[in-house]
Image (cartoon, rainbow, N blue to C red; front, side, top):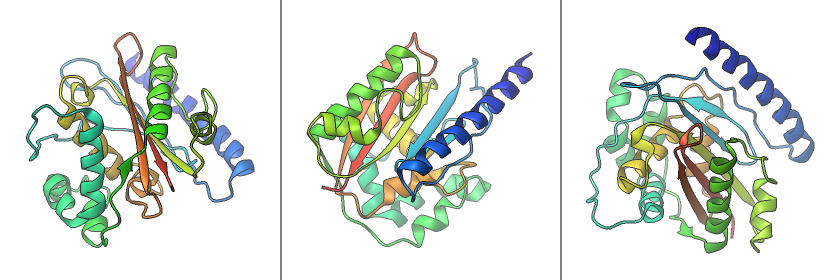
Length: 246
């Protein structure tokens, strides 16, 4: 029964990805469509982990939770601060990020090329938090969790949501959700930031690694970070990263 349920989820996911590709092709000629993987169960109890990313691009991946061992002191840090620091770690010191965060996956052959990619990259500019994009991202994370939906166009588009808050630059968006404890930013902000960024950078099974490209895109200057937790929803923990060009 469980295998049948996973198969049905996979088929439905493929159909949704194709339909969304058509919509994106009409609005943006540079969009990529990335293919979803079957859902996977977590260890200990049945838990789902799903991630999606876009630069007005859609992709869906499932993954076991990554190692979230942190070299950063926990302290009294907010999730937004922790997430910004983790994104900027990958952007400004890609080789160091690869060696600290991706070495075990590289050694086991499960890094999806991320280790070699980052160790061969040059640094790009650090991002700063943008209040307008953060408001947009936070509202959308809450909307998805409260309405038990998951996608980039459930309540407008990334661009239209940002514009509604007064943001005038171009926007790219990553969204992710997972019920694994490692994604609970309320209980462990640093650990959740590491887990989410690592998941999106590895981008297991995602053709075109759109999540990774968004995080490492040197054209972006700012980012908005939204997180919302609702244990009554399917995935518990919902993340939105809205990247902006100005």
